[in-house]
Structure formats: structure tokens, C-alpha cells
Image 1 (cartoon, each protein chain N blue to C red):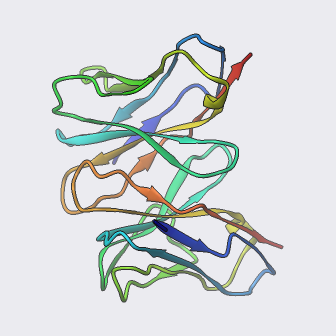
Image 2: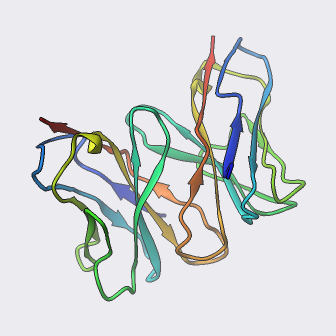
Image 3: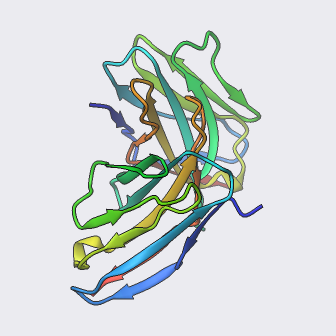
Length: 113
Length: 116
């Protein structure tokens, strides 16, 4: 029972480099999302998707790109990393019901030097 | 726009005592859901409890209960008989039911420390 799987768990980048955080879920959830967690600020929504082929911006989308070609996968791309993107990133999914809780991946700690 | 406020950055409680973690919210949508999550020091996010805005009774899950006061727009988490393993960060979150969006808006969290 894998649930939501994120890779990598840790990554160090230099300013200007690009990378992709992978996220996969095996629960057939329609909804997937990416959050970043910074000290004292809770979790802030970056991008989300309500189904394959459909994505939308959250609260802090700048500098990030997403796509949703399959129900299972929702990668997050950092186009040109900046120190301000140093954070812990969480991928989460839920079924389409209103009361459906988010199932979270274990998180990915990213440091941009 | 939705907003979640958790005014207690840190809380201490003695083992076996009850503790209340505060959460207030702001929304113009009459239909919404409220969630609480626990994040231990290991970092994973653990779902604890859910309350719908039209639910007649306060939600309970084992030692967790939600003190929902709709008129005051508050959804406080009550943990009874605290255990050392309850030491963690706790987040309140809300989902508006308007439209097709499913995103949760989170508060800034409360760090709970249970003292032996």
C-alpha cells in the first residue's frame, strides 16, 4: 500500500539549476496538489490538478510548473531554482468527495544554494 | 478568500491532561469542511479529524474531538488524556465546497509539547 510517493526525499541545487520533484499515487484519486512548507507559514498551495490534463495555480505558483498527463503522476518542475525556493515540498491527493482528506507524501526537502 | 488562524505558536500540556488547540476561520461560503492534521518531528502529515459545516454534532475520533462553534467560526481541536507521542505540530485546514476545487487552506500551526 504505497499511497503517495515522492522522490527525491532530499535535494541540493545551485541557483539557476532546474529539477523535477516526482509524485505518484496509486489510489486512483482525481485531485492532486503540491504544497510548500516554510517555518511559521504552514503549508501553502503551489499548484493543483482536478484530473488528468487539468491543472491550476494555487497561492504561490511563481517559479514552478506542473503537468498531469496521467491520473497517477503529478510532477513539479522548478524552472530556475532560487534560494527562496528552499523549502519542504509535499505532494498530496484526495478523492473527489467533499469530505475527502488529503493523503500526503513523505515530503521532499530542497535546499537551493 | 479563505483564511485560517491558529493563534498559539506553541503549547505545553502535562501528560494525561486534556488540551485545546485553537483554530478560527474566515469564509463567505456557507458550505465547507474543516480538517486537523498532525505533523510529528519525523515530518509526515497525519489526518486526525474532519467536521462538515452542516454536521449536527461535533466530530470525535478516539481521543480527538472537534469543538465546532459555527457562529464564532471556530474549530478547536481537543486532545484528551495527552500522551508523550502527541508532541507534534498541529495544523488546522479548511476546504470551501464551492466549485470543483478540492484544495485545503492551512493555518500556520501550533507546536504542542507534552511534558512527562
